[in-house]
Every structure is written in structure tokens, then in C-alpha cells.
Image 1 (cartoon, protein in one colour):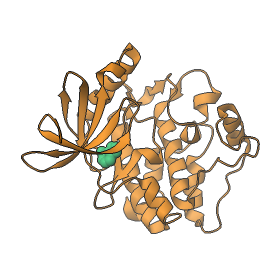
Image 2 (cartoon, protein in one colour):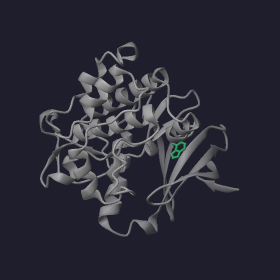
Image 3 (cartoon, helix red, strand yellow):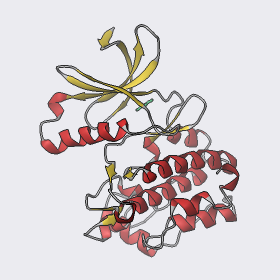
Image 4 (tube, protein in one colour):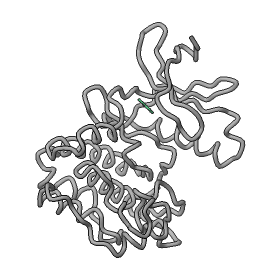
Length: 273
Ligand code: ADE
């Protein structure tokens, strides 16, 4: 049994960029937590060290039922341990695949929780910038828990959330991240990713993953050309209202993409607002 501060470390829950995430149990209170272990040796350059620092700084300020809670940071000689709320329901990804795709009623509840968390972040002038299925976990009651704030950033004024660092996974990344070279509107980038996530919830696959010229989707430039020139296709079972909402979010031009407020009042979601 390996101890870490007041916790015993059990099995590995996942692998992060800087090390493992392990299940921890408090030796006195029995509380389960997820401990993100960052090897000090992996923070050799300033960029990586400041990324971890920023993640901790952002997590400190967040308190929302659909955003992972940070309870503590434990410093040891070899590791920095970020002690997080344990999301016991596994990954949303696995929940979707186990059902092939989600029924709209199930998706409405989960998507409303995602949007509630994103609205909370944006109101605090924080953008996540790496929203994707792999970063959405479920708690034991099957509520969404947004995790991994390694790319998150603050903007000072709601009117100027312009950013310059390109982040995230290509399949979820808004086209302006690659197409334009200058600044982008951070909050609009999160909306695009939420659109990709909603599409995946309702279909069981990603919206722009079927370019015959780019079968692995790993050529980012081809991926963006495909997004810019391909009309969004839907499986037959997706309802007209859900399609309408997706078509408001997955708009390549960020100036024409909808806002969080427009999503929250959309009739597909209104019952769960
Ligand atoms: N994997 C990564 N982070 C986690 C968390 N907070 N809870 C459960 N599994 C995780």
C-alpha cells in the first residue's frame, strides 16, 4: 500500500500528460478522491511548469456541481498531487458507446449540465479550450463532471476574450484555431467543442471524421478544409430541433456561431435550462 499525504493510493484511473491519475482513499475518513500525480522531473521546462501552475490556479477558483472540485494540492519531493473530486461513473465516452448513441432525453440532461458548467466558466472569464468527450466524466449519479483544465485560460474583460495560444484536440478544435493566425475569441472556441460533443452524444461518432482524403483525421490542414467545405450531415434519428441547435453551434465563422445564452434558451434544451 502506497501512502500519499493522508491518502492511500489505489489503482490508476487514467494517464495524464505529466503522469498518472490514481484513486486515493483518505486513511481516516475513507473519502475517495482522484489524485493527479505530476512527476516533478516532468516539469523541466518553464512552459510545462506554468501549465500545471495555471491549472491549479484556475481549479482553486471553481465551485460548480458539473466541474471537478479540487480539494487540495499535496507537495512531496517527487510529486505534485492535485487532489480532485472522484467521478465514480466513468467516462461519458464509454457511456455513449455502451448505448451506441444517447437517447435525446438523456443527452438533453447531460448537455444542459455541460452548458451550465461552461456558462459558469465564461462568466468567471475562464475558457476551457480543451472540451472533448475524454474530458467529461460522470459522477455516481450520472451527472457530468468537466475535468482537465490544463489548457484553460483567463480573459480580463468579457468583451476582449481574444487569445493567441492554439490548444486542444483537432477533432474538437474550432476551425479558426488553425485557419487564422492571429487572435481568436476563446469563448467561441468552447462553443464549437460543445457542438462536436453534442453531435457525438446524439450520433455515436464525431461530425467531421469521415473525409476520404484524410481517413485517420490526423492531417489537421485537411481536417479544416473538410470542415469549411462540408455540409453537416445527420443520422436519420436526430430530431429537427436537435439539428437546429447543432447547426447554430457548428458554424465555422466564430462571429456567426451562437453564444451560451442562445443555447440555454433553445427549445431543444428549455425543459432542462
Ligand atoms: N480520471 C481522471 N480524473 C478523474 C476523476 N476526477 N475521477 C475519476 N476518474 C478520473
